[in-house]
Structure formats: C-alpha cells, structure tokens
Length: 159
Figure (cartoon, rainbow, N blue to C red):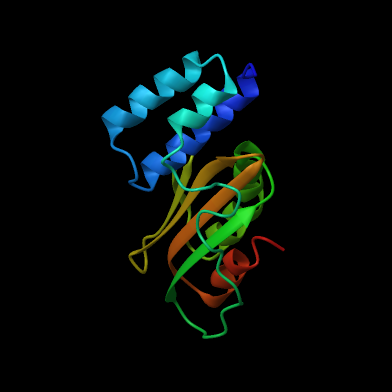
C-alpha cells in the first residue's frame, strides 16, 4: 500500500523522538529521515522504524500529584498532553509567563521547543521543553527551582 505524506511525517517524528532519547545516532537519524521522506510504501516506512519501540503509549510516564512543601524547591514534571506542539507552546506562553514573571522569574530565552525562565535574585532557572510525539500529542518536560505556587501550576498542566 502506498504511503501518504502524513504517514511519512509521522515516521520522521518518531525517528526524531528516538534520536532525542539516544536510541539512534545523528548520522543514522539523518539517513533514516532521508529514507522516510523518499519512501513510497507503508512497508518501507515500517522497515525504517522496525527496531524502535512501539509508540502506541507515552514515551515517558507523566508525573502525578501536586506538591505541598512551601518555599523554593527543586521540581521536575513530565506531562503528556493531547494537543499539537504549537498549541501547547502558545498555551504555555499565555498561562505560564505572567505568573512566573510575577514570582520574579522572567522569560530569559524562547525557542521553538524550549522556554527558559531565570530568577536573578535566587540564582534559579526553570526550563520547559516541548517534544512533538506525533498524533497530536506533546510531551512537556519542566524542571528547575520555584516557589510552591509555580510548582503547583506545573503539576496541574494536564488539568
């Protein structure tokens, strides 16, 4: 059966995730992406990613629960959201930037897949990374040092 552009793109996204996880090296990643973009059939696409783990479930288990310890503390959150990367990133800019700035953590760096907030008074940093998993799903990885209100906001990202 012939492969569609959407199926080729989904294979490239799965290859990118495997590369980011360290499953395939850069040279091999580039080679496989080239083969995926030129694939004519589904069988060719299946062969390109046959040795990679099944992507039917989340790559990383999301974190659960809401923090309760007060003060500035280290945190790490992993959230799997059922929305495309662009929508998740825009929502993050809309809903995370204002409260972080109010808590003394202005946006320091903005990229297509990362947001970095700095707290110059406490020397802390909060990093938020976005990973497109395909099928309109986005993995959000956030970590840093923040006050309780900010940590709770990150814990509730999937609400």
